[in-house]
Length: 164
Image 1 (tube, helix red, strand yellow):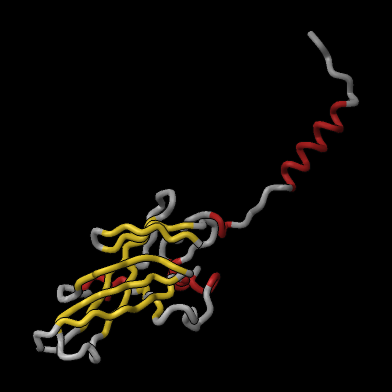
Image 2: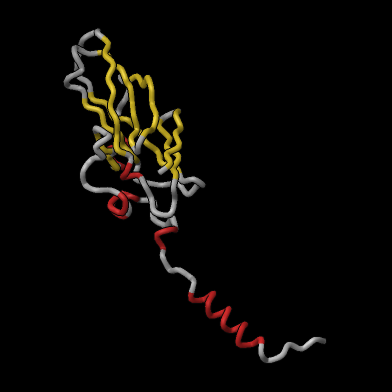
């Protein structure tokens, strides 16, 4: 049996010590908190809306469950510059009273990449038969989570990949 000289023991202990000291106890890279409303939105985002977007996504699990978008027709949907861009249509008199909100459930699945469920909440009381098309964009910054660089966004039957 080969016996190592005692000169290797300090090297072994030095390497072991360096490995121990290089460990990072930063829990921000672990997806342990699926509710992002308070914990991570401020990590990446300011209180103001991204100037390239017109609205901000709203993280609200209660409103998500009761949201209605049955009068909304999604014509085009995509992501550009951290904004979700939506072209939509609906019947109405002129569309000036429409209210459209992008809602998030407030939970994050632990897939790779993680998945967020979103829904449009559309309010339209206009009782005219004309059809109007509008465009709007939503700041996706509140959806970001530390430790990941992309999310899968599920909006009804549509799936988008948000890379940031």
